[in-house]
Image (cartoon, rainbow, N blue to C red; front, side, top):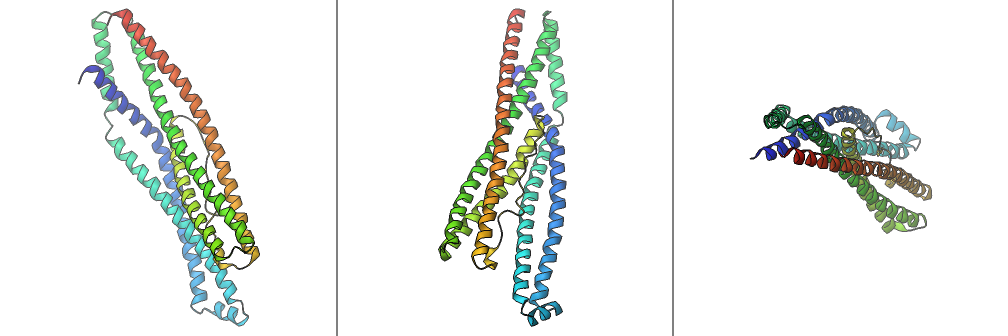
Length: 312
């Protein structure tokens, strides 16, 4: 492999190492935050299930409620709460597994890139010595332009990676909105006597939207990590804990269906707001990309000019 190929290869690996070093603290913070949330939700899930078990297996409270005719109502309430706790816990555990996997991959890759700086410095020294050996008057300017080009190319690569993650998040938000819109239509139909078919269709769309929103939440974490490396502090989050998985199977009547519709509409509003933030951030990133593409072209032309003048 020739000098230029070696130099290009080590620059690419060094840029990757610097990227990983920049995002690792954010990934570690994410892992700590989500782990704490999982531990809290696991405890909540256990406690809610205990409440259900006590009513189902004949506690004194269950006996007294049964005497006054309130047991079924209380049991339905406890089942709803246990269901919601289980759903929240399941979503948080999926999120934790995703962050843990990304953190592990980043750590393993970073471990394999530990000698990049030494390789890069050695090649820079080799290039400087070659330039000085030839007695080229523009040696310092060539080296300075080379380093400026490296920084511009690194930033451009990171911006493009952030844009890619943001576009994935935008697509997930759009897909979730489509499912929510369909769920809302079925919910309206259900309000006016749509029957079992409408109820099943509505819940099918709610389940599909829920999966997409869980994926969106994980993707937003990935997007936020990439933004860290381009020095943008973004707070784009979505709280799914109270959004969709509400068990109106435990309810009967118009007001229960109306509550479901209200929750769907709230979810749509939150996802729409999140999508707006993603779009605004992507617009900012694309402006940055244009600027660094201009700088890259400028440094390349400057380097070409210096080398031609020096007759390298």
